[in-house]
Image (cartoon, rainbow, N blue to C red; front, side):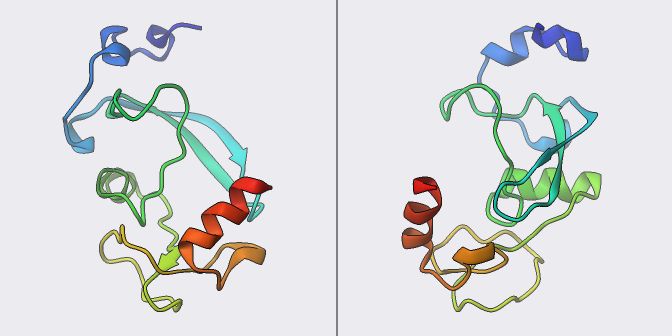
Amino acid sequence: MGWDAFGLPAENYVIQHHIHPQESSRIFTGAYAHHPLTGADVPIWVADYGLASVGSGAVMGVPAHDERDFAFARQYGLPIVEVINPDGTEHGVETYFSGSGSLIHSGEFSGLDSAEGVACITAV
């Protein structure tokens, strides 16, 4: 299936965008992925605001911890779940937090330092 199957120009897939999510093309697929750690259903969207320098293919947005994902989630009313916090307690999500801290809302990994948590989760 080509990129244009989603109604987005094929060149959007190749060109690195520096546009803000509010200026992007986006389509909700109607499908959901099963989050392997929390069991939550995660909505699958197709959008053209990804950065080619970061990688290609499918990505999981982390709206509580990435400025662009945060703006996209806010614009479309998507859930924003805080999973890293400086002191390990929930503070609510008024803005994104991209620093280190302790994992929360992360199943069996909650309470771990974020660096240790990344190592443990990727080892699963």
